Length: 114
Image (cartoon, rainbow, N blue to C red; front, side, top):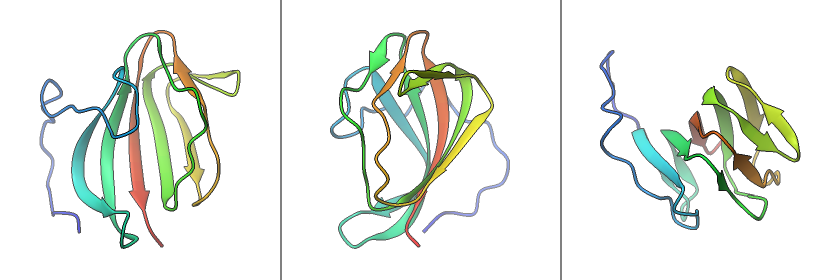
């Protein structure tokens, strides 16, 4: 369940961690909520940042919906370079990636089960 939060400034220098199964050059900062993948419920909003040169080697696939907004930097997906202010919405079980960011990037992601 997500908390009711009014406008506040995110402390972008704190709270970063490497998500399980990701390379050390990619970090998340959970803003709100939680996702219970075992029981297939919940929702979370997170920031995901790629440090310059970060990349993944295999496509991802998960059993929850995902919405992604690229705030800054560039993200390369399948050989296509995406610029800031691009958006993706993926249903569960859709393979996506691998990903690469030569200059680094910051994403806002929302994950949820239907």
